[in-house]
Length: 227
Image (cartoon, rainbow, N blue to C red; front, side, top):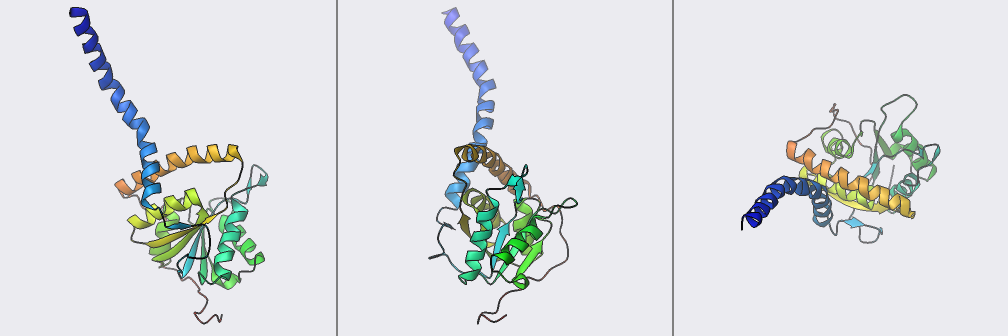
């Protein structure tokens, strides 16, 4: 009996050590699943059926990645321009990173939105969208927008909608096309699982954007379609 008792004691002792590690490993996966389920039905892939909002919040990304075109960039531009032309939004707030000399996601995206047919006067730039949290919270606190359509790839939109809900922002999402490469999919999913865990942590600890700032105005196209 003693060997059996010793074995049971060893298993219980090791389980007490292993259980916290298992729970820690599962936490990001649970955050990922929880966010996806929590925003189900609010991310649209077609303009038809998408509720209107004053502003599209276009989440920034680099135009190039390691010297090559960023496969996430072009579809976001196309999606935001499509919303504006369809009359689903009357202005676009482009929020992205402008943290170093010669690099400006908002300015690059504005230039390409204009090239896609969106009038520049209806494009507003937020140069302090360093993280998704910053972009979402600043849309309300700095730019006064409490009702937006978030534009990015589906995985990113879902996380943004989760953050928006916890900051009192009424938001739906419009999903830009995802890259079709399997390599991109696997890499993106792994990174997104970790990003969602970080987003949950941000909500729990009440993290604020890196920069606040004075209120700024978003220029909107008139309801009657005039400029």
